[in-house]
Length: 330
Image (cartoon, rainbow, N blue to C red; front, side, top):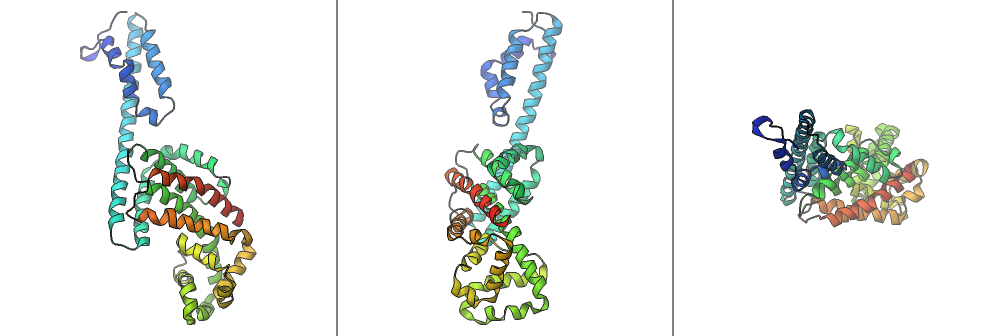
């Protein structure tokens, strides 16, 4: 084979040496993490080098193609470096927040704000494959809220990227999945009921709360629910945490508390009329949601390290928990 002298005095033998099999594998190490076609590209390059024509035009064509792929590789590597930079930033932010002396919900709120900024920085193209994966994991995908359809793919995206670290904290993955089920409980049940209650009771809302507020023992149990509805009356934006919502649902299985509370009686009637209440209030399901709160959501804001094993557990149980909820409210 003849060797054409290229720019900078390099021959195509020099380029062939640069793209030797060993170096090619190193060059495509990052590409292999983002595309399934890296091996095909590698084979293509080797084939080009083996089957090169001795004529001048054939060798120029090879060099042009190799330099083009070199540029593509550099672009992908730069993109990967940007992803790793984002992950480093959020890991550091989460570590700092976990160590702060704040209330649990304040920490989680700040963590979610960090995650929202990360969401805004990730392009639709980057997350596209993870959307398709998520759609296959959830039987009731089409019934999910648009925000939930963002949280789950982002969790899968972070799950993949964090595996580039030897000892990564998977709290962001777990929090995104918990945001998904929290969002569904809020929008499909609690937001609808709260706004419906406000609309029906109107100016009589204060008197509606009278019994729940006047009984000290009852107020300890239903006080958060009353407070949330009263706040929403002013803001028209109902706010509940997953733990609060599950605690309220669990009280509906206690006849003594329900009989004493007009608010719980009203809520239970709403659920009977608008959901498959028997399924939704099933004690086993309520326990499973409680486990999500205590085993995954809340520990994500604690200084404890949330390893990949914990993330795998959360990823395994979440589709069943969310799909079940959709069956209850659908």
